[in-house]
Each structure stands twice: as structure tokens, then as C-alpha cells.
Image (tube, rainbow, N blue to C red; front, side):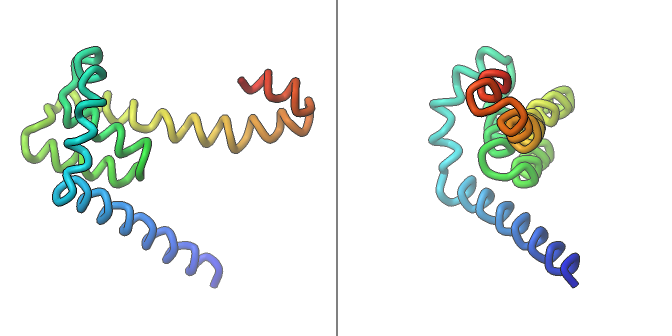
Length: 123
């Protein structure tokens, strides 16, 4: 029974994340306002603005929502096929880093090495 509620909870959270990001992207224009911040990253990386906005959504809001934005941009022709794979790899990096560093290494280092040495080691 617990597994069922966990699955329902996960589906609801992913659905809410996708809906909120799409509402913000279309109606609120939040991501177009972020483009002034992401503009330098676009120039440095050589990626389009849509790519950088997808990465921001993957790392900052919800990974699934960012990937759905990327898929929509790809269907609209705003993102090329050559850009999709690097974007997916770059978008997954913060999640992997957060999962491995802050949920596994940091707690173990703090417990085993103490707060000072464990913090320095993790940092």
C-alpha cells in the first residue's frame, strides 16, 4: 500500500512540476525574463537561448519539466538535433551532483570525519 501512495505522490509531483513550468513559460514569460541572465552563457557555450532555458528549468525547477521544454523546443525547431544530447547531459549534471555529493558523501564525511574535516573534504 505504501508503494502505491509513493507512486501516486511521484506522479502528482511530476505533473504539477510540468504544468507549473509550462504555465510560467507560456503565460508568465518568466523564462523570457531570465534570458537577460542566460544571454552570456549562450554566447560562451554556443547554444541557443532555448537550450540554456531548458538547462535552467532542469536544474532549478524540475528535471522532467525541463526535458519536456526541450522536447517542445525541438518540435518547434528552436533546438537542433546536435544540441539535444549535450543539453540532456548538462541538465542531468546538477541532479547527479546533488544526489551523490549532498545525500551520500557529505553526511558520511561529516559523521566519519567530523564537521570540520568532513566539510573540508566534501568542499
